[in-house]
Image 1 (cartoon, helix red, strand yellow):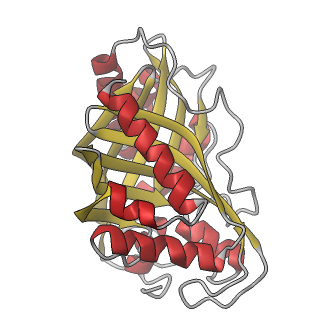
Image 2 (image 1 turned 180 degrees about the vertical axis):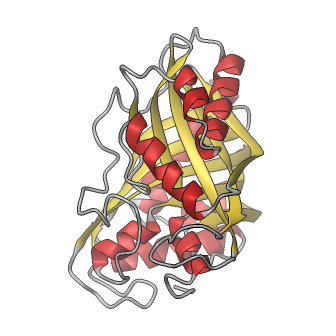
Length: 308
């Protein structure tokens, strides 16, 4: 098998054995001792295998029937990106939240770097704010699907998130996806419209509540009205396979405009991590999945208390 296929197999093993079966010994087999986690919805995670075991046991103890489905995986070189969905019923304490008996759905985008058969670094954005709102543990302050009374699933779309059409130009697809993410964050509707196929475009964006191009434009317009100097900075993580591309980066800006999450202009500088996965067809983006650390953003604004 290729390096990419080996890395995908390791990725599936990690979720099937550790997350879904509670076989924590696998962590010491495939997690590097100095493995670093960059972002996980505000969750405190220690370095290395024991830190990941602590994270997973927190989730499995709170949601004994919990299951992490892998909705799509793409790989390039030493990087693997996945679309994920956690489903479960809260029957135990979760970061100080007493058992509620409520079922939750939490989508996420996970990215790992794998070297020598070991996961050495990970980046993760998840709809933690939406999940906390589903449990009734936090006020409904977000712009996402949960706050709007809608399902927090990825939603229906074209395919299952797996790479297809391996004959496409990986480099061009990556440039196209990065251009789109930068255009939509910059509020340049016309530039973004040139990059997508408006007749077939579908967005899976439960963290912001967008499901087509128009609703996506409206979300970023609202963000820019609140944060006029909003920028997106890619951090060098750009993964392409077949017709799929994953982009990771950081959104930054200053809250000097309209209310955001119910908070009036605060003058605060805010930053949150963001992951985008897109599908390209015929030189145009036709499908996009989004996850972002909206919980951290709400906490920075003061809309929600910090901490678990």
